Length: 94
Picture: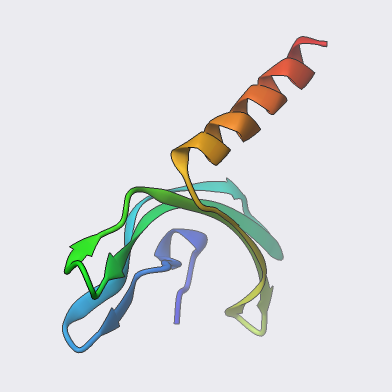
């Protein structure tokens, strides 16, 4: 169990292999509701290699000292991530 947002991870290991390998994360907000942006890769069993970078925004609720994932949004490619960044930058300029 994670005690702090910094302890939360999306790394998932199965049979000694990280099926989901967390590369980095940014804690966007803390408190009863915590939001974290992750950069990760998935293991491709057929190719025996990791995917290109993917991204996920996850929301956790802390109840009784324990974090529970409540929602997530996966960004499946750098192109999609860049489109999101471009949209935010355009909105911030207004």
